[in-house]
Each structure stands twice: as C-alpha cells, then as structure tokens.
Image 1 (cartoon, rainbow, N blue to C red):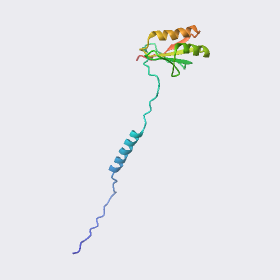
Image 2 (image 1 turned 120 degrees about the vertical axis):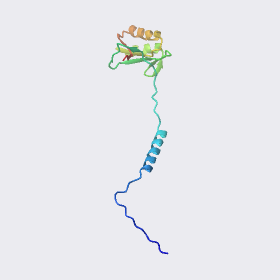
Image 3 (image 1 turned 180 degrees about the vertical axis):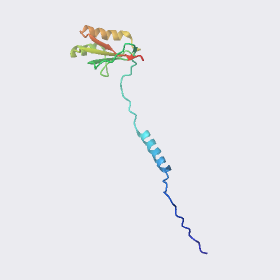
Image 4 (image 1 turned 90 degrees about the vertical axis):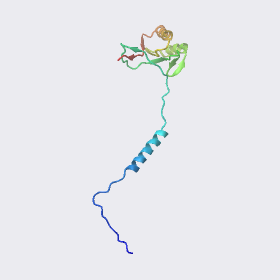
Length: 132
C-alpha cells in the first residue's frame, strides 16, 4: 500500500507563541521579589505635633531629638541633658532645632530650651508639621 504525502503550504506570516515568554517573565519577577532585600532605614521614630503657623526653615546647625519616652538624641546617639549642655557649650552654636515627639513631656523640651537660653542661644526652633 502506497501512502500519498500531502504538502500544504501556509501563506502569510507565522505567529510566535508568547505564553512561554510570559511564564519566564513571571518566574523572573517572583525570583527578584523573593531575593531582594527590603531596606529599613534605621532612625528615631517620632510623630511631630501639628501647627497652623508652621513654616519651612533653612538648615539648622544642631538638631536635638526627643522621643515619646523622653529620650534625647544628638545625631542619632542617645545623650543625657548634661551631655547635651556640654556639647552645646563646647561647639558654640548660634541656633538650635528641637524635634520633639508630640507625646513627649513638655518638661524635657523646656529643660533643653532653658539650657539653650542659659548658654546665650537666641534662635531656637521647634519642628512641627503643617496643618493642611
């Protein structure tokens, strides 16, 4: 028995199947999501109080940070009020910027304010967020 071969010529362009390409893209996406490390920026977490009269200020010479637990920080390092006073006296700053958490006690803010006034610093700013 003899079989006949049929030759059929396709006319037009051939189309590329994109399903395998989509599968590879999803695998690459999952690979990069699972292997990437999420960067967590270390820092002091404070919630600034809101004020209607808040305005943007230029760069300050020294920033004192006070957390809600009444811990004080200079340049990200915890300091006591005595150490802050010594540091300000030694460096002779013209202006101080106080970033205090809204839940911090007012007493710590007033103590730092008094230290600055006692050392002759007239420009003292308190960080706030603007009310929208």
